[in-house]
Image 1 (cartoon, chains in turn yellow, orange):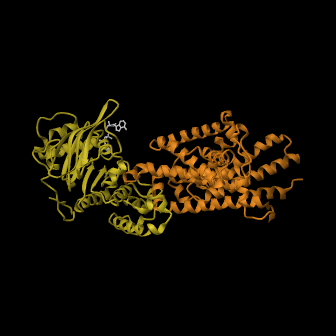
Image 2: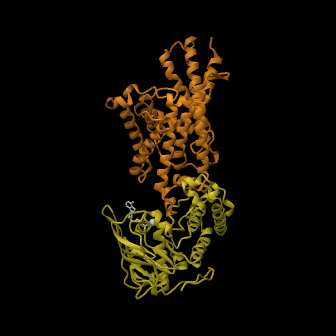
Length: 304
Length: 327
Ligand SMILES: Nc1ncnc2c1ncn2[C@@H]1O[C@H](COP(=O)(O)OP(=O)(O)O)[C@@H](O)[C@H]1O
Ligand SMILES: [Mg+2]
């Protein structure tokens, strides 16, 4: 299934993830996250209404959909940052419903935020170290006795330098995170999440606001996560990027999952085109390459 | 003419006075809350009142020894912190501010009301609880010192204990803030959701911070009443604001800031009140009564603090670099 080759310009896609037809809520061969009947309303608005969804393990899944589709709200629910009106979900077979966010993170399901949350007045290194799990010195009484945690701290620092070097942030390690550019902060947030050695990484719009010069390296980092055995679920608007790196695509509109499938197949699904264009098309646009290209352009323009 | 020598020596005395130490410790508590964790505690006066009353009532009404009276005061403030924190620390930061300011006033009014007069002395407060502390004094009777710093054995004992506590609290705070615990605490100040997403129990850390800074305030309240009596009107909200002024003067997320801030605050206050009182006597301020002059010193201290904050907005010990990124 998953491949160990390093990502190049042509990423190795993980295929054969689902069982049966590629339809909303379809079964996966090896799901890491399974959600059932998850709903969340804000006032009269049903922001999330997901009957059933499974996220495949060891693959990169893109969650797409127009603005306001409920992608961020679904992220918040699945990670314990918001409480659903109803529904339940399991991560690696264990129920997560009602679990507070910090416990979800400890179980290995770590997220980033659409609006980057770099801890501005902490150094880049401190941001990284905060990501490490199970630190002895994070207990108030042991904090007073540095000999109890100094070794652990240096080991974490070494690991942080390692990750920072991969993200080309190692030269900034002593700078305040607030002094980084927007794209660098996105990188830092992702690098920090990796410090906790997660099994499922959930990235909410990792490319948003990132300088185009940095996007390729961000993409490579996401592909690298898969190579290292992690599962990735990410929200993204740019269809080119989704096509380039995603193994599976889940499409949301008005709170529901309207389509699922392989990134190339899913674009031809009339439900997806409806979701973005808000109107019905009789013919399958994807069958005609020029029409499909126009559609992508139309979708992109809509999203700009 | 004006006796400048007396003005300066009276001001210098404030450098090591127990009151200065008490304010420094209370401000260090606020540094833990506000400067490091980002908690808006506007009820530090309430924590100080619990220390003062907890100590005095334990001794006067229950005949407790000094150590037990100290434990009672600390226990009261831990319970107070839990009562304040449990409902509010899950909510947005401003809820804690509202609840603490109200709770501190409730505490003060409970100590002021006649209902508990036998215990609290209501508006008159309490006195006569210093015997136990004085009895622990190892310094032989007599007067010691140099220049303006000339005290009897009790006054030296009091200063010694007060400043030892301040130094220990500074060392303790310095150590925990440079540990992984302090890193989590500072992370919470920057963005608590980000820290939560990294698997830290933010609520529990905020509670620890609230309790710790509150205990500093409580011990400060005990130090504060050892050179004077317990009077409920001392614990008004303005006390909290003076302590915030000291904190911002010294630098909010610093260890030495609260100490130096408290020294500057009290030295300036003493200097201006000495100067104004003598200037009125000398007829320099003919348009002013001596009561008006008494108010003027707070105005002058306010102006002095404003000037310092304008020209050094990060506080005396604050890091200038941080200021470049303040939101
Ligand atoms: N805290 C909130 N209060 C009220 N409405 C909200 C809140 N969060 C999200 N919404 C609404 O829920 C819908 C889904 O939002 P969101 O999940 O942010 O969409 P997406 O991330 O897909 O762009 C939107 O209509 C949004 O306005
Ligand atoms: Mg969103």
